[in-house]
Length: 243
Image (cartoon, rainbow, N blue to C red):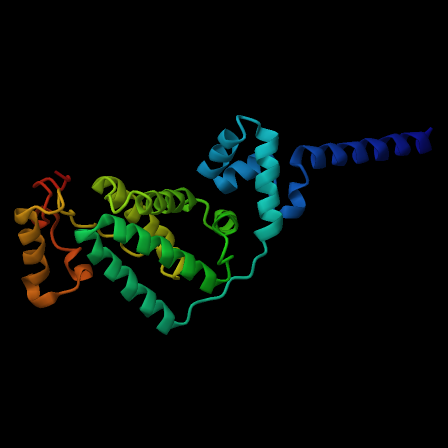
C-alpha cells in the first residue's frame, strides 16, 4: 500500500511539472518565466504590436517573440570605447542642428546612425528586419520609436524631397534619442528638446529667422542651446507648451 502511494505521488509530481512546462511554452529555459505572461512583461508594447500583426493570434505572436529570444537573447554586445562614443555624440548633435532646416534630412541621418551604432555594438548591421528583431529583445521599450523613425525616413526619401510633418519628425527623433542614449552607453541622459523647424520651406521670414538662430551666440552648438529656459525657446509659450 505504501509503495503504491509513493508511485501515485511521484506520477502526480511529474504530471504537475509537465503542466507547468506546457503553460510556460518552454519559457523557463529562455529566461521567460511565466510563459506568455513573461513575454508580455518582457516586450511590453512590442507584444501587443506582434499580436496585432498576427491578426490577434496570440499563439503565433508568442511563438515569434520566443524565437527572437532564442536567437538573440544571449547575443554578446560590444561596449563602445570613449572615443567612439564621443564621435557618435558629436554626430547626433549635428543631426539635431540639421533638424532646423530639414526634418527629412535629420530623420534619415538618425536612422543611418542608429544602424551603424547598432552594428558597432554587435547587433545585425545589414538587414533592417534582423536588426529590429535583435534590438527588440534588448531594448523593447524603444523599438517602436525606431520603427517609426525608419518608416518616416524611408517614406520621405520616396517623396521627391517632400518634407514630413514637422511635429511627426520631431516626435520620432526625440523618442529615438532614448534608444540612442542606451546604445551609446549613456542611459538616463537628458533628452532636452528640439527647436522648431521652419513652418514652410522657401519663406524669407522663416529663412532669416533660422539664419539668425544659427548666428546667435557665436556659433554655439545646438546642444548648448537645448537647455535654455523653456519660455525662451522659439516656438514655445510661457507655460512651456509648443505653439
